[in-house]
Image (tube, helix red, strand yellow):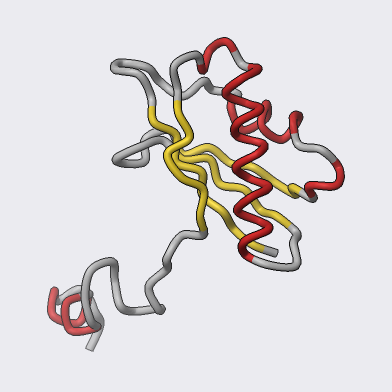
Length: 115
């Protein structure tokens, strides 16, 4: 199973519809094996739909998500003018490394770790 993030670029001032994840899941075909979709409307720099996909390869999973998103953008009039920026697996830092640096830049130096 793969987690694939679809980054959707909005027209100026537009917000991701509250039911975008539900709509995306409804548009997925059984053979695409999309198990779950969640919305992250406040993600920066673009809103994100997160898809859990059963697939034999990362490339296949990313391609399936892109196809579902293109159908969503075509069929959902509330998403007129939106663009699929990219569909890819997110990079996740190892546990304890924080977002941007090695372990010493996380809670260890901040004083938030118990001694």
